[in-house]
Structure formats: C-alpha cells, structure tokens
Picture (cartoon, rainbow, N blue to C red):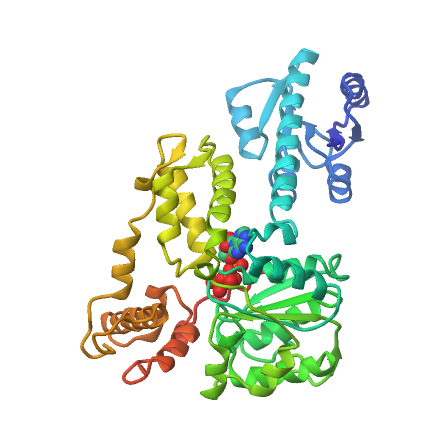
Length: 476
Ligand SMILES: Nc1ncnc2c1ncn2[C@@H]1O[C@H](COP(=O)(O)OP(=O)(O)OP(=O)(O)O)[C@@H](O)[C@H]1O
Ligand SMILES: [Mg+2]
C-alpha cells in the first residue's frame, strides 16, 4: 500500500526546507505550507498521513491550527514542534489534538522515529479498512456450501437466473440461506458493479418503510426537513433485496406492485413521477400461500414477484450436508478465533447428525462457533455441543391444555408454532399487553409481533403504543 504524503507547516522557510530534506531522504513524500491557513486548505484537498507543525506560526497559531485540523480530520496524527519543552506547553499541544511533540533543537532521528510510528499506524488502519471491505465482499455461489442434490440444483439455478433481469422470490425457513442466495444472484448478474441495497421490511416500522423505500419530499410529514431519496433511487441500475417481504403492509404492497410494472413511483408527499431501473429480489420465511389466503398478502403481488422462485431446503431435508457445513464453519471459526481445532470427534458428529436443526444453517453455524470457543482439545468433543435433547424438549414446551392438539405426536412445525405462540403469550402477559414492550422483549419489531399475534389469534387485549416505534434500522 502506498503511503500518502505528509504535511509540514512552518512559517520559517529554512526550517521547512531542512525538514523536507530530512524526510525526503528517508523516502517520504512531503507537502509544505507556510501558514495554518494554507495548510487547512491543503488538508481539505489532499490526503496526507500526518501533519508536522511548528507551535509558532504567523497568523493563526500552531495550537489553533491543531484544534482546527483535529476537528476537520479526526484521527489524523498531528506532531507539534515547540521551541521550549515545558510540561505546560506539552499539555497544551496534546490538548489541542497533537499525538506527540518535539522540542527544538532535536536530532533528525527523533523526528524520523516519530514519523515512522505515524506511518506504521496509517498502514495498519488502511490494511484494516481493506480487510473489512473484503469481509463485506460480494457473496459468491461457492459460499453456498453443500453437496446434496438440492444444493447443487440451487447453485445451478442461481447461475442460470442471475444474468437475467428476472424478478426473484426466495421462500424458505429462517436460516436456510435466503440472504446468501440473494447476494449471490446480484454478484453474478450484469448489475454486479452497481449498488446492491438490502432492506429488511420487518425491521423498519411500517410507517417509515414507505419513505425509506421510495423517499420523501421536504415537508411530507413532521420531521421531513429535507427531501430524501429512497432506497429504490439508491439502487438505480442495480439490485434491491426486499427481505421479509411477508411483513409489508397491504397499502405498501399496492405501491410496490405499481412500481414493479415499470419502475415508476412518487416520493412520499411528492407529485412528480420518477422512474428507476432496478432488479427486485424478495424473500420471506412466512408461509406465503397462507398469508394470501388470510388476505394479508396480495395475490397479484405474489404472482408479479414469483417469476423465478427459489426454495432453499431446510437442513433436515439434506442431512448429507450437515458435516460438510460443520467442517466449513469449523475452519472459519478456528481461524477467526485463533484456536487450532481441526476436526470433529465421532460422538460429536453423531450428535450433529441426529439433531433436527429447526434454525437451519444459522443454528449450525452458531453451534460450531460455540464449540470452538468452549473446546479445550484440538478436536470438537460432544460435550462442547449444546444438549440438543434438552433443547428440543424445551422447544416442544410443557403440554399446555389450551393449545394442545391432543396427545399424539406433533410435527416439528406444529411444535415450533406452539412454542412460538406460548412465548408471545407470555411476553404479552409480562408486559400487561403492551405491544411495544413485548416486541422489545422478544427482539421483534412491533409490526412483526402484530403479524404473529394475528396468525396465532392472540389479538384480544393488547395495547398498541404507536409512540414508541423502535428506531428504523434498514441495512444495506
Ligand atoms: N448453504 C450455505 N453454505 C454456507 N453458509 C450458509 C448456507 N446457508 C446459510 N448459510 C449461513 O447461515 C447463516 C444464515 O443464512 P441467511 O442469513 O442467508 O439465512 P436466511 O434464510 O436469510 O434467514 P432468515 O429468514 O432468518 O433471515 C448465514 O451466516 C449464512 O452465511
Ligand atoms: Mg435473512
């Protein structure tokens, strides 16, 4: 990585030139400024990795300059050179934002040493940022681990559909990889170089979702101080991923349907019709057919979205992938956590294979992360795994006479539904029917909670406190 230049600020020409000579001899690229004002202008225009300034400058003093520079470029290393080193001046320099100071006269080596430290720091920060950017790097199809016929088919379908502009609907249980699939489709599409915008419809309060999605005009509603572009405009030319679309309100579904026809929309509070070119990918873990039957999801929107349908299979339907995924996550977490755990013991493998994985790949990933943290030996032992038996018994819950479906064996999804219903009922009771509080306790949005309540016929007696909407948290 190439180091940007550093900036030397001094109103004495000789001092500037001698600093420049010393620094250039060491290979640094140097910019010079003869006043604080000139330096600030340069800082606004060019990237530098550090600033060296004299305490005494004509015009704005070195201290004022430090304060200003630290405000404008927080985190930029600033080194001050003072005529006398007194503790008081040192404190003042540091308070003004300097990370270090040098007293005149100083040896060139002292200066070079301080500069080298700042250069190193700069490189570290830059490398870190590059690493982070890479971690958030495009999803790829080969990130979709699995060798079962179902997963191979899925990869094949992604590769076939991605380059087209077809609208995609992804239906699957929680943790089956819907987000991964959506990302892979964008990455493999012609739009890969453009924006990929992801919106979680369940995480944004219903009242805000429309303006987040389509933008709003200044004054459209209280708090709309200026015009804001929506996500669809941000995604222009690229892809928009509407996650948890089953949580979208019916009025907004209507607007989305219109948008899908030809890409036109109006901002909230606006009259001008705008048009963008985006590809839409939608996903939900809800039973969409059931939602349509209940009148909660528009059938016409479903058909419009359902051009290409992806159904990532639950993990229990592709047991042959369990160990492959476990190995994949084991390698990832042992590297990330710096623990040399290379394999999974036979009893632990058996336990993983016997479990039914209601939380799918996400649950498996969490289980392996936990095991890597807990495991003292170089091989994952069964005791580092959760007690799956106890967990599934807990999940089934104690027989509840009111919701029991009789004494017979229950399907997993019935048992899960019953457990979910009981948890929601309990949270509502504990919060005296206050929806906002119950939703917070369950880590759901109120909208998502209300949806589940109507699904479980738990509507009576709850108080909806609209005022306490959680902060919107759309992620991109
Ligand atoms: N086939 C797979 N190979 C590797 N990792 C996977 C696979 N499927 C899912 N994962 C991982 O499992 C986790 C959950 O996946 P993802 O977030 O895509 O699920 P989801 O279907 O969107 O779930 P939810 O409905 O809860 O949002 C992620 O960490 C993802 O990377
Ligand atoms: Mg998801």
